[in-house]
Image (cartoon, rainbow, N blue to C red; front, side, top):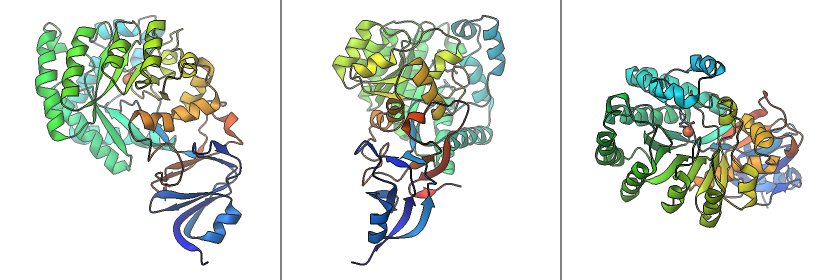
Length: 406
Ligand code: NIG
Ligand code: FE
């Protein structure tokens, strides 16, 4: 039989992780056509069946699914490096927020930025993520906190993703913090969120999910219940920030509301863990660079959660205040050291685990036949080396939708 034409042959892989058959040391090549994986196997056999238009030599590296970053705050205009010094002097994250710094300082910058400037910034954030192997991401608004600035943020994020070829799953985070002008009248902001912002975002179709920061100094469980119920009613999926510093009922609410995920969890109680394990639906979003960045001594119970069978993902939480890194390989290192996860659990959490949490596990996060051809070549001898080194980018080749990125 004559070999069939195909778009791309990736060959000379040391090994290929597909998640369909686990880590296959048998396979050293993949066939890609029309942006999808069509076959995985031995180069010697695949060459007999396929005639590729182009080829990519993996140089003996580890081929893995492209990273899916499922918790990102990319819509900010400037960093907050000065706060990093304040923290060194002992000022706590929530104290900085109380003084009008933190999230509210990013809000002032985003509101003041022109759409053009903001677009350039968000594009640069996506490019930094891409260099570290992120081939698709979730992205949150949340530094606008007014109808106008939240819509601006979501629109700019969409434009930036299109311009950079970054598949984006957008989340509205108008409930990130009470803005300065409504701090004396939180009820008014709750009304704006539920009756103006959520419906406006829905009408424009520019976010698939809604998020809220449930924490002392941000939103309490009663406010969160109203917001989540309204978001659900409008058809939004829910992704929730909770149990970062204080346990005030966020995880229980997330489970009750059948949220897609509840993220942070450094202050998760045994009861919260049990609720997640019983739910089996709501993912634990693990963000191990955050407590490091905040100089905290506590971590989410990563290993316990995974052992209890709770679905999970690992993400950067890329943002200017609590995790200023666009790098999922760096997150893998922190997850191995601080959450006691294995290399395989780390890679799974930032590929298929992350994709499943976003409802895109059929097409993304794995490399079985039919999956989107989003893949990476890592300059690593085997999977045990993933997250072993830190401060080094192992990503040497990136393919998105079957196209080799330059
Ligand atoms: O996920 N904790 C709340 N939100 C972000 C931080 C945002 C910021 O400080 O700018 C987070 O850590
Ligand atoms: Fe976050």
